[in-house]
Image (cartoon, rainbow, N blue to C red; front, side, top):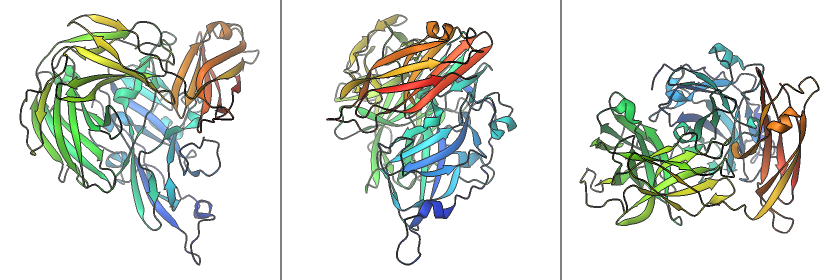
Length: 540
């Protein structure tokens, strides 16, 4: 990656043991506690030189459905001394600990009561805070969360309702055993989950975090190298995918980029679930104007790392190819959704995810058309521990994908075919997402101080869930009028008879004027069994 990242070392935070162990004592006076290390990594995006986020808290809960205001959270709050991390420097299996002076994880030695934890929340300082965090000031930043694009422009990173935290529900719960140490890594995926937007004519970034979760005592590693003519312009992306029992599609476990100079790539950490000692992965490699490659049947051994025992794919020669572009025809709601573009092989009906692209929440379309290969897929086999092929297996229909739309609580849509011709741009209409199990609403009242009235001419309202944007609506007329009311319909919720656990939403409003920005929000709008309401006052 370009640039040299700067990191602030986490000052020692000693969380009062009495607070964490109250009610968790064993026989006599022996506390039933364990220690937990939590680090962060990233699937960096080559379009950014720096991506700074300021982390100020982490929480653990035994229920996957608890909202951020529920009782029972185990909290480590470092808001008095937050840490600003440059995620753009954490590519190819690198962790925060690899960059810190003391080589310790971001949160090191957390004392947690022995329990089974089914939810983790990571909190970022608000981008909109007038007073910057000390760690952001030390790095000379303008915002607590800030990106430097590849052409040098600085942009704020918006995370609507950051006070609600980023919700992570591990596929396998975190079991904390008394007297033991657990090591976790949370994965930011900038490659897929950060987009550039232009809400007021100037570039901003929106983070739509779907954090990955890894138990570092149950992972392995894959490494390799790509040979291609121009790595700097090809934007190569490598995905590790698995067939997941009970699902009709492959699941992407980890994504990475290649080193633009050497072509090297690392896929680490990769989960090996349960009591298994190995896991089988299929590796998909794609890039701009390149023929997609799939390497099937790569065995990963639990306990391996990039320096010890990693499956080595060697050098993979990728061929130049052609592509077409795809764009959504009409604005789509919920606009917080993302679209996965999938392809199948002639002898393998379980789809591979080739690309994922988030909608621009302001427009309900992609910020820019997405590029898709118009070539057949080149397939290799690695079942013997060495590369063989390319084999005859190929794409069912080259230059043809099926697009599946997803959003939190809505689930997945049916796929729609997207096919193109080299050098053209095609448009498509995603299949709709249905709010399940019932469609609820939020009635929202927005006001602002008298001194602000007349200063804002543009505005947007966000509905969020666990740190993710669900939907977005433009409110220019309401902002110009100094406030008013708006109702958002068709949100997944429940009824008294059939509640939907965990259906707690946030409402956030951003407003712009000439040289002016204002925001307001409300958390914990409860739609688990009823409709909801929010009252928001705009602040500068």
